[in-house]
Length: 120
Image (cartoon, rainbow, N blue to C red; front, side, top):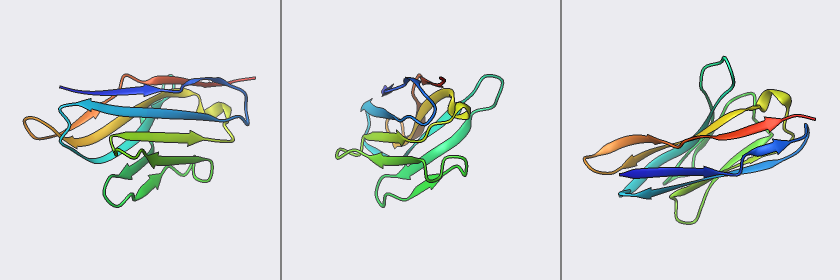
C-alpha cells in the first residue's frame, strides 16, 4: 500500500502565497518523479509542475512559470509547491502524483487532493 498525503491548501487573496506539501509513505522502495496537478470545476485535470527524484529536473505549465516553484524534501519522499502571486484562475483542487517503485512493481499513485481558493 502507498499513501500520498497533501496539505497546505486554503483560502488566499489574489497576489498572496501558499505552500503545498505532499508526503509519500507505505511500501515505497524508490521514487522516480513527483508532481502537482490541478483540476478546476468543469475542467480537466492539468499538469502544474513535476520534478524528478535523482537529478531534480523540473517542468512547469506555462501558466505558472515564474510564480510557482516545485522542490523536493531531504528524504525525496516529499515534494513541495510554493505558489506566489496567486490569481483567481489558480483556484482548483491540487493533486499530488508520484511515479514510484512499490509492490508488485512500478506504479503511479495519487493523493486525495487539497483545495486552493484564490478570492478577495
